[in-house]
Image 1 (tube, rainbow, N blue to C red):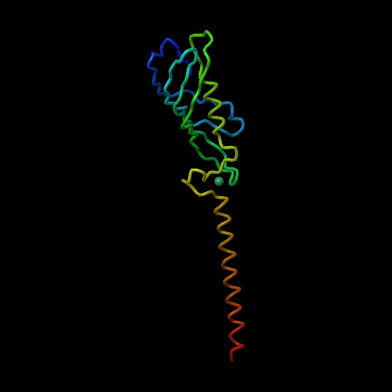
Image 2 (image 1 turned 45 degrees about the vertical axis):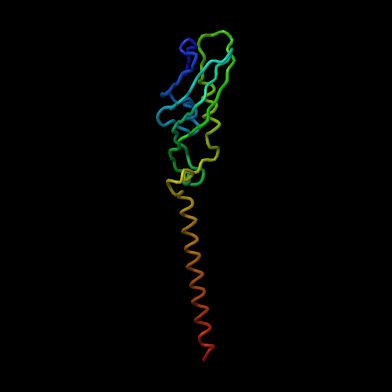
Length: 153
Ligand SMILES: [Zn+2]
């Protein structure tokens, strides 16, 4: 994401668009980019520094640490902000900062139900086990009743 300083007017510049996914090399670690990076930024030059702030989002496919299934998670950076000292070059590359921010917001232990739009299969199994346990509790109670009845006579 290269910015030409001459293109930034005194009142600042609004940039919105898409770029290639900045973390494509993580595919070998099971993190796959889904679509491109979306950015929505305000840029400006103040003195000898460039500032930028706005939001970023990048959809990625991750593997759930509980059920091991793949799922798509959208990394959102709602308050991306950079401040870079300018020391000569006419273009500034924001890609390293963007990449770092996306990496920081990557979930370290991804759970497929983190966005609340699905139920993790690993949790469904646990729930089913609890149902079976509850049923056996009831049958134990039934047997207890059967044992009590004869005593009343
Ligand atoms: Zn899961």
